[in-house]
Image (tube, rainbow, N blue to C red; front, side, top):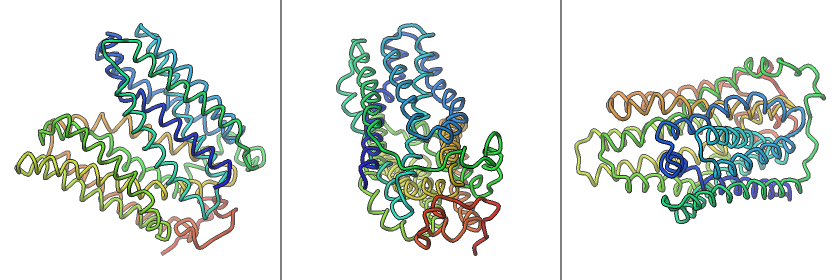
Length: 420
């Protein structure tokens, strides 16, 4: 890794560490510590998603025009102000406004950092760079949440104010670190006049491979937020401590397996890797079905439920060095920022739709819930195989080409040759 990439990875770790301090405790802070009730706390969580959905379509355009670094710095300052004001807010209005600022800043960080990784990597190093990003994000979130849990005290508002102040300090520290990054030149929208205005989004939606990849990612990411915890509690009788163990198993699997599976996926067709993830997750849903509907002992149900989260973690570890580099390779020259923002937008849509659909089903319609998401997983495998026919040989098997232009996704969907 070069100096720029090392600083970008430090930035990913710092941002995740800061978010880990507060995200697990937002509901408790708003509903109980500030005494604003469950309704306001639920609105705060919704505001995060809404703010992201509003700003992300504009973020991609700004990244393409101005470059990822200035956009990232603006997002970090916005998020720091939102975090600090959230720690001081005492009314529903100020809490919601602060959450909107924090959510918007946090959402824009993702595509900005991803575009910086694209600009500072090559076809040979990109998969490993995104694997490192995912590894550090999960590690940062886990460590931040662990430390934050030992600092908070629901009887003292000041302990939560301290958490939000630490989060704001992490964002500002990240901004300082990022100002030292020297980005290589990459094409901007001014260099490609034909892609200006609405044409960029029109071309993106006309890229069949990109649209299929977004549908795949929506199906993938929506499963994590689909109400699996509600299903575990209601159908399998999982205790809160066992649920915590399952979440820890997911993170541990990612941390332990990330670089082991990287060696496996680097020389495999990307479409086949995504298809394999669909099959792994299909097995995970079968195991989850046994946990809640298998009428076994409580110990077996708990073990099966924890195994489900571990299998999801294995799939995540396989996707992280596969999907994000593919987005970069599908983007026309100079348009990586817009494609990364569109991808982040799909993630936010999954975050919004997943709980609304999966939550009630997981709590009350357990058998249809398992069948639905089992079919989703098998659908991922089917769509991934179809996606492989839309990709060029280099996009699906990046080790075949070494051209930086091709690796940056210089060919648009219209010029993509179908592969067998």
